[in-house]
Length: 195
Image (cartoon, rainbow, N blue to C red; front, side, top):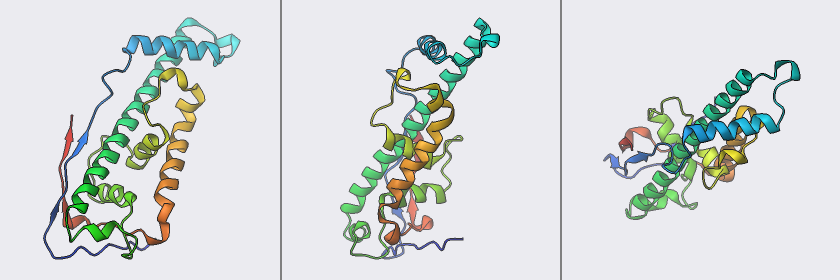
């Protein structure tokens, strides 16, 4: 097991961080029927079913599965976007405090990196309804905006989205691997609000 190094927080008071505002699926998402139609086009164009199993019911089932996978991608992206926005708000909070400002700079060792905020969420066991925070942040790092379903192949939706998200997150988190310290979870409070 890896030894966890905590950054030293001056004083003994608990620090109140901004709330984590978690947004749902974007409002401008196509209606589900349109997404199923787009997924059906993906099934059709990528020849996902062998000829002997190529039946309308099977195609519809595959299109529904792709649509569900796409909605999962949207939920991951929204969580990741919400976490990155929360990190920006936390950095503003740290920057406004003379005691906390040095914790985000490389001159203090171990210093906190942006992934330290994700680790804080994990240590605080924030309820995510089955969303993996690292995958969510990795998905947001991969896509600046939620991609339309037409940009996603069936292979991406079924197999690659997790590995791409994991790779993106770990590349981001390891930018300053040797110096990253964790925030002691008992020293921070914040609320999580689903919008």
